[in-house]
Structures are given as C-alpha cells and as structure tokens.
Image (tube, rainbow, N blue to C red; front, top):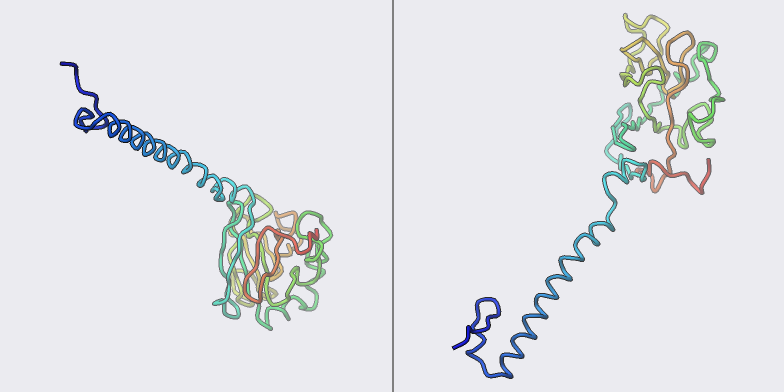
Length: 211
C-alpha cells in the first residue's frame, strides 16, 4: 500500500478522485490568499508616513485651541521643538518698548533664512497674537527659557520680557529677535506655517507656496 497523500493533516485517500481534486484546489486557494494578504501588509504600511519622513520635514498640524493668553505650547517638527506663543496685549506692547529697536541686532528681520517673507514684520508672524517659533538658540543650539517677567533681578531693569538662553546668556524679545552684543548671531527661526483654521496651524508648509 502506498503512503496516503496529505493536504495539511487531512488524509486525501478518504475522498474520491473528484473530491480529492477539489480539496487540493481549495487548499491552494487558501494558501494563495494568505500569501497575498501577507504580501500586502508591507505595501499598506509603506503607504503611511514613516517616522523618517516626518523627521525629514513632513508638515505637522498643531491644534492650539486650549492655549490661553500668555501661554505657549510645544510641538515637534523635523525633530526639533516648535513653540506657539499666544501673546498678550502687554507682550505686543513690549515689542514697541522705546529704545528696544536700538538694542536688537536685526529688528527688521533682514537676515535671510531666519523666517519666511510673510513673517518679516515687527511681530514676525502671520497673526500678531500668535508667534510660531523654533526655540533653538542660534549660538550653539541650546533651548532658551521663556521669561515673560518684566525687570527681574537677574536680567536687569530694562528687560521687557522675552526669551533668555541660560547656556551663554543670549537674549531674544517676544518675537524671537536677538539682542546686540550677545553670543547668538541671528534671530530665532520662524518656520514655514499655514493656518488651516483659527486654532490649527500646519507647521512646515507655506501659504500659497509663499517663501
């Protein structure tokens, strides 16, 4: 007696020829479908944005609906932090402090590459109330601290509020503009950003492809 044919653990001799043939066809179809499903898994995964793609610069949608006046929130884009600050009326007035412009290295944002063209204004923003900023000091890459307090003892009586880098003492105003005579050579970077609604901004994309 010859060894029985098997399909999986089923004895094919238990079926007539036609039944055996149908069983083999069905089994082949199941195996083929399973193989197709397995092959499709990496294809589907590859269609989703990868962490590497996001780190490489894919835009990030930031919802800041819960942000109160005077508060800021942190998001991540290209592996770096991005701050969104909701400026108060007092913060906006601080940008107009008498004598402040003379103390800033680049008050009109002339240095290219530090902000898009649509952010080359006194507020360095699309909407004066909101500042979108990459908080990486342009000296050696430290993250400045948010210092909204006016005239603190450690920063002096002329400090109107802004950002202070604790690593080497660089100072920036509420628009991320750098002071003169500090280690940081340029203003903090304003990334490309596009408002999708009143409280959602897409970081990493310019409106109407503006630059």
